Image 1: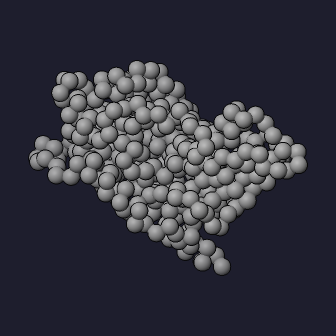
Image 2: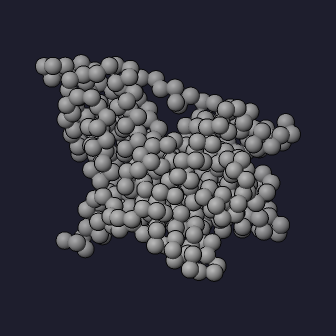
Image 3: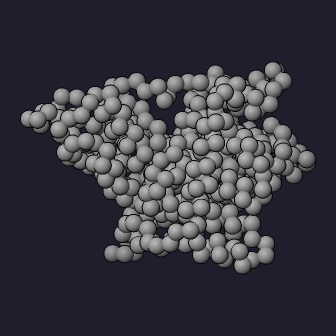
Length: 399
């Protein structure tokens, strides 16, 4: 299993798979191979179908230091459904170097022709069952386990914490229209004002925080993959709420990020966090599971209760499709993040009280395996292609 540092990344929106991953890949290409006068980029799969709405073409042209020709392919001959071919051309526009780049979710990349060390395995255990057995046998805590493998993680998560706070702050204090054809108005500022006018307002505050982060993402501003940019509002809302409203100590919240990151890593390793592969259950569903575990830790629950919370968060997002309207990370994505943070909080509460009544039969590993199989059965039209679902109905309505 990869390090948690590869799960949480700071980058610009609106999509970790469609903007952050191509940007990272293009930067890596030039740092390894040098610069060239011309480039040709062929997008395939979800990157081709929703790349314009996610500004994939724009970020590639801004990143590569030369003249860039971008082609949106209709057909692909690849096993993985999301990626692009990056070709370097000489002054005669002849191809002299080619990389096949897969965007595997959360801004992570895999390259057929080049080994990236971002994907190195750090954790030996591959399931939560193995982790819990290791923790029990060695009489250590879940945090001891994480920091044992990643001793410098806490310092890194401090920067993630700061970036999430800044992202929500910026989102709450910015007005205007989000870019793109939908002409959506930012609403986090007004939603937060509405929350302040209510007496029992914690739920509305958390939703406003999720809106704030997601609107920053949709505007191409700096956010944190948690585990993706399309689902960045859930964990950012959890962090902001815990710190600003509940006044929880910063170090404890950073530990909660580590706990949530461990469960996100297990989902990434044993299933997927890519909407193009598994639908939105892999993005918002994974984020809800992570935040559920984080909330449970902040409520001082034990390892079994934390696992139960993460399992609840994932189980009740099974089958969630990814059908962004016009290819933008706006509808239904922003609102879905706002609902997701409430699901995460409720999952932790349910775990806390149900654990006193009975044990749970469905394990976290079981529900992750189920999510993986469910994702394989979701039609391609409902996996970040904008060919079906709400995206299709919206376009039909507008015709």
